Length: 136
Picture (cartoon, rainbow, N blue to C red):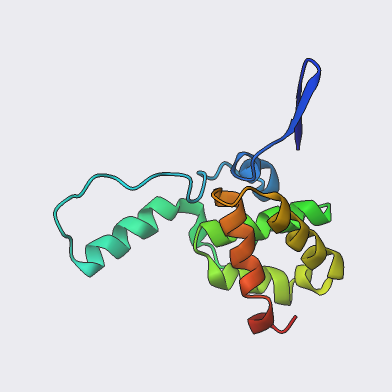
């Protein structure tokens, strides 16, 4: 979670923790930039490519609950980054990760701390924006 080099310590990026949080080697969700324009594809070709690129994300079950509240917030952020809305809903509502008030308080605190133009800020804000719709 924290990387120490000499006399400096830094909190590892959320995308760097994907393997630890999900227990398998997943690709970093949305950390890639758009490619240059390519010829337009059909809708079904794009869907096939997306499903192939997702690999392990296509499973219906969500991740196991993390050990700490920070792990759970990071898991929700990674699922949001991967566009797995149903998996986030299952993780927070059915598995109960969102029932803990500490989850939402920490998510709000992280949102305030992340610099405004970072992926992590966008991901945590995306999770927070759906809070009311999930009944929390």
